[in-house]
Picture 1: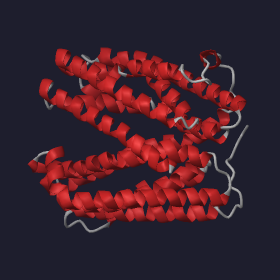
Picture 2: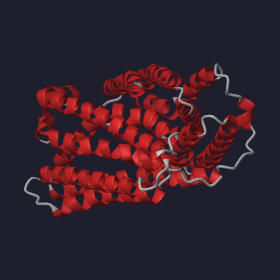
Picture 3: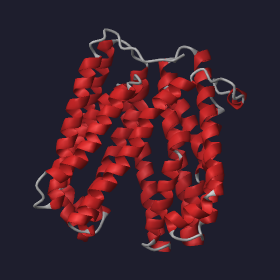
Picture 4: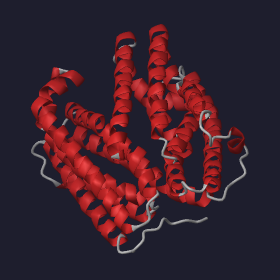
Length: 424
């Protein structure tokens, strides 16, 4: 079964990624001190926002369009050229803007001009961040999962070594430099793997001439851009609500729940991105699509039940390993988080269908229901214990999100053969 194979291979990649993150965090804590984490998080937020347009918004469309045209090499080349063009120009625009406003950005995010050079260093490297993600999207869209995962594993190992060396020698500055530049090394690895394929010709991507799929790519980009904006805004509102209603300590407990959630959901979400998006993009008949959705749902249910059992049995031990004994209060709410995540993962299977078929308005509507509903429920539900109220709001909002997507899917499936909207 291909999905199981992808889960196993991707699980290894995620394991290496988790080890890399833990290793870097340990090095930062030991050599740079606790206060450095806030500075690093601010830089990471800047990078994430700067890459929404040249990377996050483009790559999903690239995977979808290539997977849907897997038997037509000429069209795949046109898609790749167009995606490269969009990525290149967005990278150039953000590079120039960040170079110009580097000092202001440094002061606004880090409360000092001392790190302006790091901000501008990232601006110079932004193209390499976007290029590496674009090249990995080519692997994903073509279904070359082993090469995709191999590049991720090697890249994570290089990032770990590179970061630790810089942190040991330059403390917080080394950590910031590594975050701002590590993709320069990773993209070299990806290009070396690409050169061994029989379909990659560098000259075809340098000739930025084909814009036939530009409208379709930008149409698709509306979905990841909207999702990338509404989620952090909603979480920030809820966090501020917890602080104003209770304390920063309770907000920290709630954040710890999300960090635990991110760890175990990483393997599922990355697998869905690697396997399900290109798979659904290549299917156009209702029966095949429903079969794939059900198969994926069964796999997710099995994984989430296993996670729930493990967390129920070992939650105190896991919390102490990941955090400290001060966070033991997290164990009172962790099963609420898992229950909400269970419905979220089932919903995301349907959401990937909406992505794969460019159902832009349905996708945006469902995302709005999820996150706006979560924020509203946090205020509307009783607040005896603020975290309990927020966790109840999370579970209910995810159930509503799932029901909304299920109804939208049923409506979409009334069409005999499901076709992707196209502008070519």
